[in-house]
Length: 176
Image 1: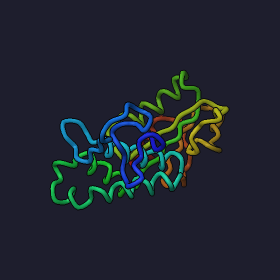
Image 2: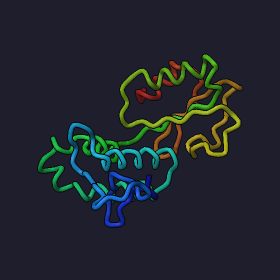
Image 3: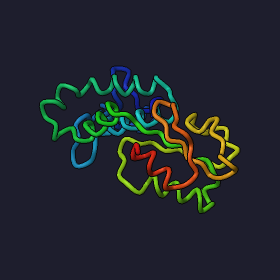
Image 4: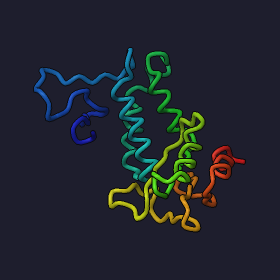
């Protein structure tokens, strides 16, 4: 996305650099019937930063926010998706890592608990062990407890005590 759509002057174009040659490459900042591609790009970058701990993704998202900050404050209804991304950027993001065979019912129960409630400021990564080479850093060095599927609830890559049942996971997700 960055390579193909980033504008050196800030933000992202709506058409790729290797796409059809246009007189002008469009770059829509305002949300319309569909969200702005720039707002979606910012949201994706923030989520990737939460999964990978890469500061460059967050920095690029923050730089792109600056393009709309003044207008979003004056006309919030025209920047709804941006405001959702801003909420994500300003909130404490919960990071959930689930390790275990995705086909196993215990793993499915952990994943179902994470997805049971609307949690807009949460990212999740899951994989069987051993991890594939392209696994996000959120999954790194997260062993299974007692050889059972295990969930880790983290904030800023600092994790609470891991759990391997849905009831305990629910308590962690609800901060109880």
